[in-house]
Image 1 (cartoon, rainbow, N blue to C red):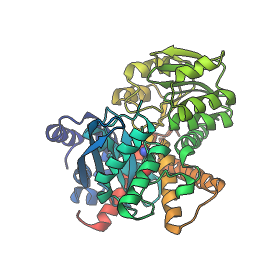
Image 2 (image 1 turned 180 degrees about the horizontal axis):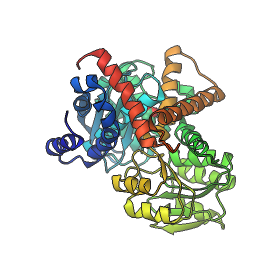
Image 3 (image 1 turned 90 degrees about the vertical axis):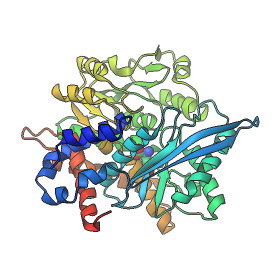
Image 4 (image 1 turned 60 degrees about the vertical axis):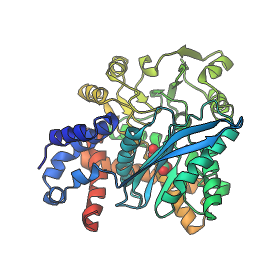
Length: 446
Ligand code: GLU
């Protein structure tokens, strides 16, 4: 059997420019290797080797014309990683920094995350290097239409069901869905994250953030602690961060920060419902910056160009983007008292930051478990679409709570240590891997 070093070395040789993909693979394979070694069939059927290669990668050009008549060229991708458990499922990201490496790492992660939800979903991810920032709604619509023209052939309710991610919210899903409907003549569940009046699920917007807090509550209870009065620092200011904060406030936790690329918003005595209302107005309605939130409230500060990790806390919730927390940030956080980390963004810690914090005894909830509530409610949206039903918000939220409790239990089953503490990284990776691997074994070579 190949060692983890052999696998990573050959990956390095075949795909030298995909460091994020290597990082995601190393994280999963380090956790599952001892498990795979004990299971002859997994080795004999080359499951680790097979999972390294996505089922299919679609790469395309998106040509679109802005309102001034200027023609632009962007690149688009869809990585369909694995459909052993169901149709490919995963978000679309529009951000100028993305490349194939980004989508390979995200699609790989998505496969195991989706498996953890217990819902029948495979893993995929895609998007474009288009930058929606500063663009008019009409230009965003034009881009979405051009993007869907190229993607529509490769997706479908039983084939591949995209949703949102960074840069793709309800507005973009609306434009993409409208474009798909025009191209195909079909009104179906090809995308999730739709507005409820267009077949979307209640609670999808809130799901990733709410699910993060439900998972965090279980993590704390497992370690004989509770969320009330915990000092929480949160990074990011997008959909995930905002609804994480909303649920934290509901649970009487103290939320000290949010952040965006301009810096950190600091609430020394904790964010309030009034602050959150301004945050939603500025970020969701005006599409503005956090600095404007600080300007609207005397009891808030804005620390330009700073990350939130230097603020004393019990819990840290990175909810911005991958590798946002490096080893130096991790040291700062640890010096400031952090005990628990819930990864709300996908892979927000560098490998070195993770290793350092684990050595210090910090409990880390990994993204594929913590933030799975978003895709879980996407799964519920698919069910509602297939049944032509629309469930009330309370029903969706109850199911979300059950799913997060189930994911937490799976992590404990595979990650509990002798001292009663839980290695959530190991637990989540093994639990997700087993589901995918067993389905692949059942279905034969492919
Ligand atoms: N982009 C989200 C994620 O990272 C949601 C995907 C979905 O709803 O399909 O899980």
